[in-house]
Length: 195
Image 1: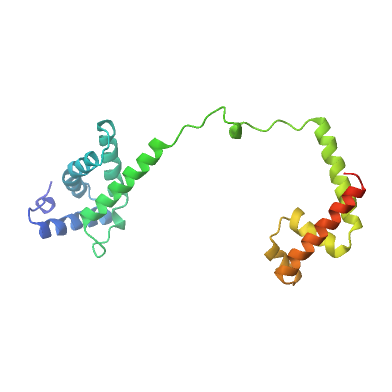
Image 2 (image 1 turned 60 degrees about the vertical axis):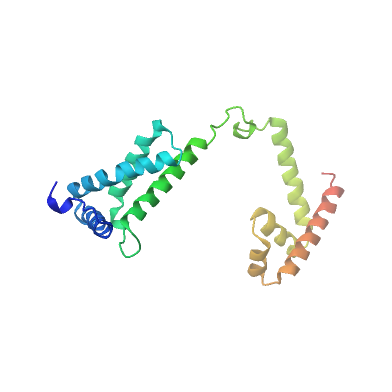
């Protein structure tokens, strides 16, 4: 370790030295500067994490993760925005939060019905779906063109009422009324067709 990487004892001098070391890591990927940063921050990060309740089993892994991030992201440190220690401990805090989120994330329950794939549609259901679709198509054909078009935009093309209003150049309230009226007319036609 060179004498320029030695850390002085005075707070202002120490902060300036830490900032210089971070800049050396950022600009030159200086391993010696990083070793000095590691020697300075690793025990402090470990003590901080211990005070925050991190288990002994996880301390070393988290310290390594924090220091790796210091190495990787040193170019993001800006001495104009804050102190080196503040920057490193922000990384530490965020790494701990990420760790806790991962640790507290429940394992997926393999028996959860939401995770079980839907069964294949049976042939009876498939026939019924095709018959229903053809009856709906026939009922749509019975509607006036404006009504069938607005229903197709809303339900087949899945457009929002606002998008439909812009597309056909009508006020939003008018579009909503027409969709409701068209849908009611379609419902009565389907009832007549016994769907």
